[in-house]
Image 1 (cartoon, helix red, strand yellow):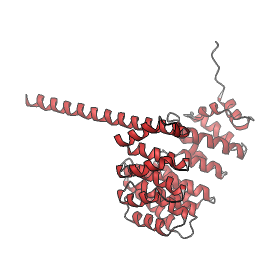
Image 2: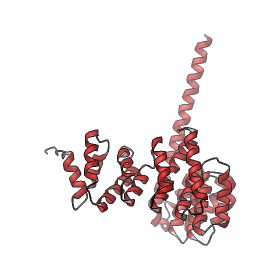
Image 3: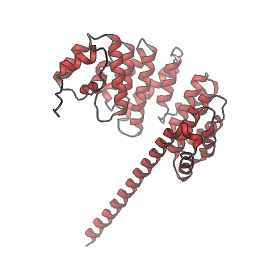
Image 4: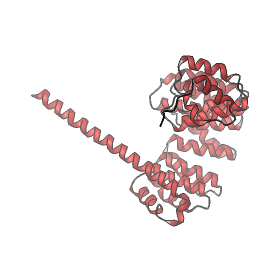
Length: 330
């Protein structure tokens, strides 16, 4: 069998941006481009049809979410200035795991001043990852403070659209700022249904167990949207106290609620959660959820193996330390 010849980069660009059918496999050629290739891409991109640019950008964002070996970072950074709002939203979705601190001011500006509400909300969502990086100590505290202040200011503006408010509250919720707890409580108690849903999400995202009584009560809310969101939040907090209530949701009339409860049990983990998931994995009544259950069990096993590996590594480290101490004494 003859080896397939790789298409020249200009041909790849022309195909991606003008062919009737978009060849998804060629999108990977936009990862790790050389400077010359990136220059060609920018020159050709601006001349492409707006609808095609939006389709390409969305596919790139979807690939970036699933594939960790691709690097479309320079592409997404360039696309933040695109004339199409759909392209800007896709670019913001694409930088969901970026650690580039130089993007922070640009994303904040898009949240504050973009002419499209969807872009402003996407920008707020993109800042969520940077908040987590700050919590993990992976970016300087001054960058985190800048982001948190910007998100809170946008949330508290009277003129901020509800879609942006929701995204801002959800994004800022893991931060330890003392203002956030009251904002979550107020949004839950007096906000619209949409804002209440974001408050429930924020409760889980904060991983603060003080919210568990509220969330466990919401597991019986008449609204399936509220039950599902509360289940997800319980999973994020990870307390075993919610297991029994989550087990009851496995037979919920709404399949999305049942799926949320399954994933929440997997996040909580432990023997009780594994026993429940293993049991329903063989129950024919749960056949529509078999794929969800399998994914949840796989995730639990992966976490257990990872923790086991870390524990084993720590034991090795302890043994190495003991050996070093013994050699020093001798």
